[in-house]
Image 1: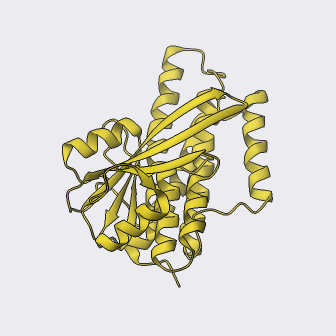
Image 2: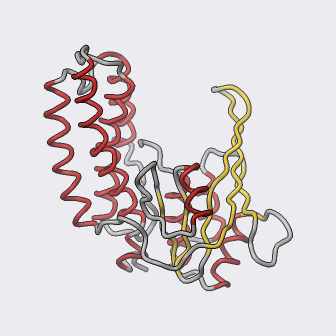
Length: 261
């Protein structure tokens, strides 16, 4: 969760573009990030895939006034509103973007080639019809902030008792990476988002780091089946809260009209 999901980048920078805070080229560059190329396929009026700048302009012309994020997981259709075909594709990708003002959504299909040190990543965003209805289970920024504080406190207590809160080289490397990003003043979200949304997203990423470290650091002191089960029970609701908070932060523009010119 230290890396922003592609749907978050597209929604945040797409919203900044719609608000007139960045140029189309700036938005496209930020969305692509370290990937090789992003294309958008299935836009009305287009016979094949097109670039991000054209796609964002076309969606605005079709009536899009904002972009929302969905980060669904099995049993938790977070941010989705249907129909079933779109929900299924979004669940498979574990993320999606839903346009506000026009009934279309975008699901990323990622292709990777090469080695870890020389990875070539291409992304095709599939445009699909969506149902115009309230998204599932999206909290307000205030709700997300309160939930995160409680989840962080409770999970830290449980994981510390089980001796899996984070130790060893894997955990230390993850913590060092997070601190290095924070010290560099890493930009999150996009220009115009309110400080509260930035704060909620950063907190969600910290909580996500705790979950990742606990999962990736082996069983730690949780050597019995009951202790391993207890760890899983502690982590699942925390991970759910962190995803809800991410969606609340990315969707602050659409849900609260909070991106400022």
